[in-house]
Image (tube, rainbow, N blue to C red; front, top):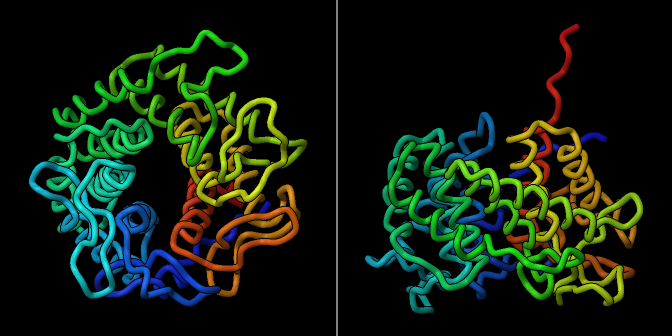
Length: 340
């Protein structure tokens, strides 16, 4: 299957010199809804790790890095929401946006081609790594970011301490072999949990945690596959006994699965993980429960949700970034062409 080239055109159309608008009506930004760190941090991930980025993509990464850095307070807590022209509209806190901020900053520190972005992101990540969230998803995102910080600065003490604490929160086992998931139901962006265990086990040289992450990811893939295509957890979550397929399905769930499978492939080079990534790409192109594409090739945007008989045609930041990141990772894992 041909993987589409990641397009940053629609992402650029949603962006300004200050940030990245969260929502869109069709392919037009909803400026009145402002910006959020949740999406800007994800934007920093994809723009920082894009191979051979254009000048425009590098410029986007500079905007996103500055936005995330300015959201951090002296405790390492993070604001999430800001209006188009005004100040932050929320108090700094430790929700998922904090974890995603660490993920974005760590990725920029490790991969950005811009030296200023790398240094500024590494310093800001170090501040955030002093904090701890009570929320498992936030700690999972932060652990993934801490792993990237370690690429930039091997032995970084703050990153190692964060990962040690995240292992305690995320690594508890369940006695139910039929439901090994560490929560009572699948919710959202589920694959970040096994991805975090995979990177924690790798960084801390803890094979038991690494294997738990790989095993949990294998189980999740089984739950989110129906026949020959992905049938992912709906927005309302899912537990054994509830109907499948269920809607609406969100691109963020597929993108999280692609992220985790890329991480597993990068570590093991097992073709099975690349195969799942191909299915993630296929989900966006219409190989899903409704047979409808979630990617707009004319704009480069991603549609906001899959329903039983239609798609949500709004092309918001989260969904657009989900498509970009999935295509980006699938290309990174694709076999190199054989020389003629």
